[in-house]
Image (cartoon, rainbow, N blue to C red; front, side, top):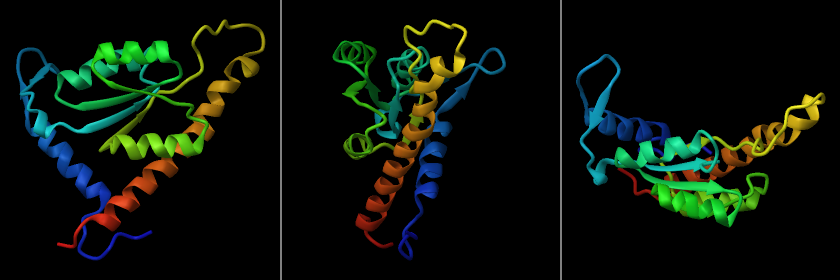
Length: 165
């Protein structure tokens, strides 16, 4: 669905938001290091799918430290407690359930979605890598499709409900 006339596109809104966040960066010291002026009102709402995994558990604290409001998904109640301890709002989610993904995206109202979901916890590599990676590959295909559809629905809903300029 095309954006209504006069309404900014979702991409443009996100680019403006990122510019505001990036403008808060203050470079110092060694090349590539920076610190942020953590103003909550300039932070983004970020949905991290797979936030309880190896990358997500390191990413969530970095996002919250920089003033972003993070909603993280996980696959169990135990992991939800871990996410809350990291500073994220936790949502137990099966990324292969399209309806549940749409509800999670709608509830989080994210400015950005980061997909880190895998099914690699407790995996032992053996002879049959295809079988070992099949659940993760399914998350990377069907799960990604569910996220993209949910994000598109959310953008369409925002554009339809935003007042014309």
